[in-house]
Image 1: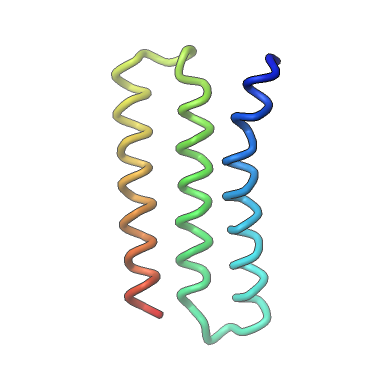
Image 2: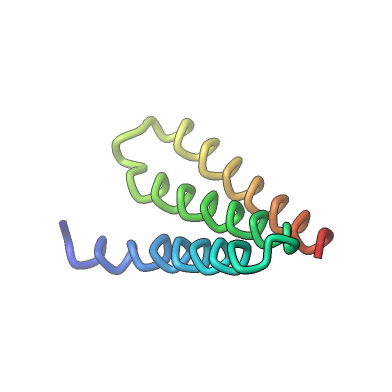
Length: 85
């Protein structure tokens, strides 16, 4: 793995860290259902970034559509979490 690829993995790792933090918040206070929604949004963001990293393996149009749809889903879920909060 190239050095640049290691630094590119930082963003999905940070998103997964935020997702774990929101799941921890939800586990301590089950009445905050918006925390689960934010955790899902961060997980979807991490998956989108990981798919973007392996773009060379997939056909270009498939990778572009998949990542764009996942990023759109992540933003939509984040807005739903804000609305729930």
